[in-house]
Length: 379
Image 1 (cartoon, rainbow, N blue to C red):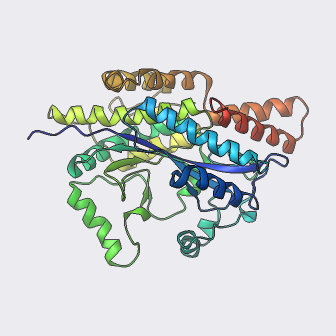
Image 2: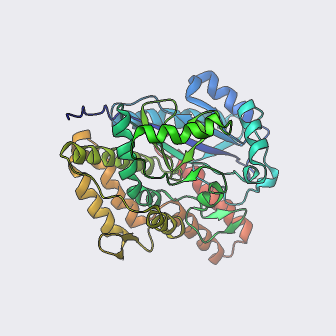
Image 3: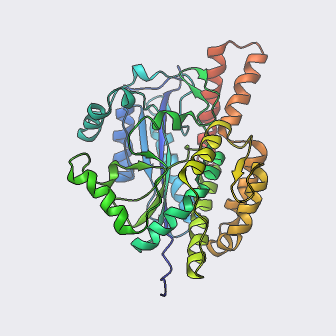
């Protein structure tokens, strides 16, 4: 059967934390004014999030990564400028270095109030931000087939994105503590392997018919078919302060999707593995980032991350060339060399401590670093 090539459009959603530039703590009071100003200027491409100290942007549907870059710069620039008017600054990090969840306020919108009521204690801890990448795959069957196979590569993408080593003023020991918080929610983690789009729909509809959820938007897997668009939505990654890192992850996921489409077009497919094994790599990425490598299940051994990255690039090189995003994809090697945001945050913190700064002042310097990195290429 001939398979029509998907559009492979791309879109990106990023969630930011809004910090007071004097205290470096999260701001609840002035964040609503920032949101209102952003919505007046850029419309529905910006919106509220679960907490008043958060804000979310979403690009338009983009035909290529260069267009995505322009969109992301425009949206980040607007949020930065309008937040500055209120004495605030956005940070594109998945946790704040020292803010406490006990002092945060739920956004007073019906959706978020209902979520808070449903989630209770696990919901109150959601002082976390993520990045979601949408890739246009219009055919339902193909979208599910690629979902099944792309799960293998999610830990690789998470390793490249980590930005949440601190939680409530303490070094968590994890590069992505965000996932530890998020995994407290129901219907999270890696999706199961689905035999067909029909099986996926029947699975979701079981909860819908039981009145547990309204629709598939309440399914918060690391990778899911979007409820609203004909896209496959990658959700596992932390949000990245450096715009170039965000683009690398988006471009790499796009190329992975096309590589898996090419395999199917040639009556081949990537081998699927038990979720037990995939979860082990997910944990390794969450705990160590790029430090300790991931398991190559075919070889049956842990392989250094830079070696895995080279192998991944070989798999998707022709796709990166096809989309004209080779520079963005190969920037992953630079991330592997200099580290992710989590690595840089920890370096800054330890350098400040060694220079005689106290614990709290060192964490404030980490916030300053996140503010500066979020502004990179956006001034």
